[in-house]
Amino acid sequence: MNKKVISALLAASMMTTMLAGCASGGSDNAAATDASTTAATEAAADTESTDAAPADSTGKTVGISMPTKSLERWNRDGSYLQKQFEDKGYKVELTYSDNKSAQQNNDIEGLIADNVDLLVVAAIDGEALSQVLDEAKDAGIPVISYDRLIMNTDAISYYVSFDNYTVGQLQGQFVADQLDLENQDGPFNIEFTAGDPADNNAGFFFNGAVDVLQPYIDAGKLVVPSGQTKFDQVATAQWDTATAMKRFQNILGSYYSDGTQLDVALCSNDSTALGVTQAIESDYAGSNQVLITGQDGDEANLKNIVDGKQTMTVYKAVANEAVVTLDLATAMLNGETPDATLIDKSGWDFDCSYDTTSYDNGTGIIPSYLLVPTVVTKDNLDDALVTPGYYTKDSDGYLHPVG
Ligand code: GAL
Image (cartoon, rainbow, N blue to C red; front, side, top):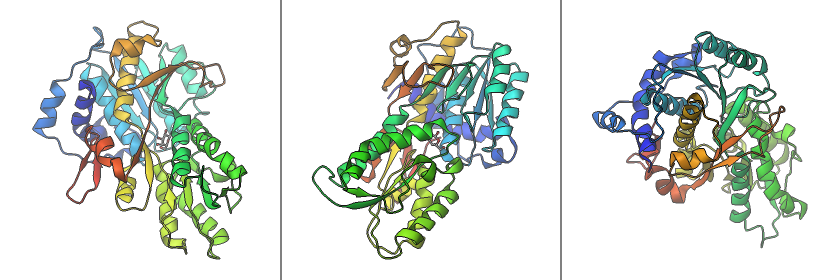
């Protein structure tokens, strides 16, 4: 594994203890994850080296605006990003905005007022940041749209994410393979749960999955008893677990209480999959194991995968996303205009593509660095997550994120 990534992983637990001191953002910050620091992790962190280390990073400040600590992955993103930048001599201001768009606007205004040199922003509402990012632009502060594309502003220079459409395709293809839909007639019953309409990623995930599964729906091999097949019908505000649970309890009560078998719950991510799993546990009359998809590798979901309650998750190595963001930001702050050559220059040992066609934010195409997601099931948990150092495994076989 890339030395930079190993270092980020090993040292991230140390960073989580520092989050509360570095972040602002009210109640969200109280949820900082506890993690212990070991001499070993500190020693490993000290050995980090980066080929593309900037000569002039010292004294520069990067403002990082994350959406919320209530969704697990953003805690890991914040830790990794902070660690990456600080190890290169940058100062970091990290904010979490409690999933409140108005608060994120205020937090970004604060970062601009603090004269940060660059902003990394994962939007709560991709449509709600145009004005504040115009202020950043006026102040000459470049902006990287992190993980979620920020819409309707020409203030953002680059987008760093995973291939979001592929995430959905992996989920859809997993369902097709597991049910052997090429050869089996079914019909199998499926219900969809998608993400937050305010998150530009959510449509990509949903469309990726539906594009794979639609031919089987058209052929009558897959049936949606609720009839809820449109994104707006299946979306989940703020990716909220309880919201997903309540909607699914209603579906089970309305369409499955007569003994109809549910075969698949296609969920766009782990926080929604958690709610759907809870609904199935409490309100599903059937006894079959429902195939449930997810995304992120959240701790509770990995436990459910080990326990056989969730079937798969699509894992996105956010440690690598932080590495790409650091090297991109460094190039930008060094006055370069990064393009596809950044990938070769940086020497990452993970796959990443440079995309100049897929992500139009309403002002034009935003050049994008897209990492590659991985399917994780009970069968490859160790190889995909433990061996690379992203998670540790306890004596009961459950996984715990590093960072
Ligand atoms: C998306 C992100 C997913 C998931 C979701 C909820 O934007 O790409 O990985 O975490 O938000 O936080």
